[in-house]
Image (cartoon, rainbow, N blue to C red):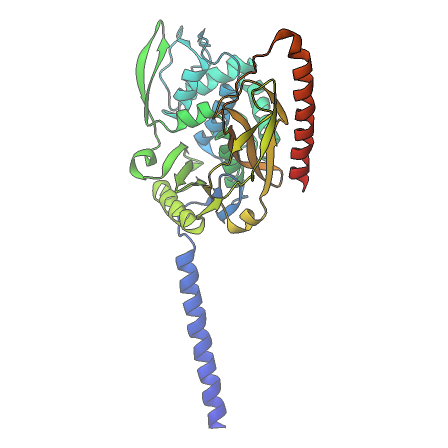
Length: 392
């Protein structure tokens, strides 16, 4: 009886110790951050690496301007100057310093939104594009729905507080993932300081970014800050390290700068670069009217990308190139690409280059028709040969 009691006591103590140990390990593994809601995703695939209440609908303050900026940059003639709307610039909160009668363009307004977080800039963009803030909000909501933001609603372009203006950490991460496809946006969000022109007449002035992580954390390459009293401190950022791109979002975070450093340290530990070997074999392409009937493709070098191992196993490779070209073709001309996709989403594109120079064949006029016909026949044969390689 005593032995049974002793064994039971030992088992009980072991269970307590085991649970304590597991809890400690778990606590080390999961970031301890101040944000009410947060997320880290892998930027290429959108895979969620970590989240805390990522689907909770919350106000997101001036991180709203990511969407406003993206819409502005997708307009035509973004460098064309126009006069600001006198009513649009009359708004509370942060400002890029627009005055009545100023000349400005959409690219300068984008800097004004993303760096000093100008509410005046956001309003001017809205009126310029849609005629009013209300109509622009409709444009924002349509855009958000199109890119997969399913739990967001926008009532204004700046992020000033409104009970019906909200998003989620997940949606804001999806927005930043989409925004990073725009090269102008990438250039703007990466700047800690930038000199642009606006005014009456336009003159140069320097704007400073509110995102202090650009200067205090090595791996941050962009982002957008936000704050209102109801929303608290909000931050959306993107980091890049060792071929791995991550996006982090915190909503209502007392320690947002520190939160993002912790989230990136966690994310970069979880996602490691994996090597892609886009071997296309010994492939040649038919060429018409050249001094040879076909030319080689340089086999692309291996590249590394940061991606979850499970996603890596599901990548699909597609080789794209035309099946014949007309001479001349110069060595290192881009003649195609290798595309890796995941669930029909493009993850990475790798260019294919011509491996040699093929000059145009100079032929006697009366022999021209016969030679071209012969080369075209050879080209058709090579085309079918390449098609069979792709499907074999």
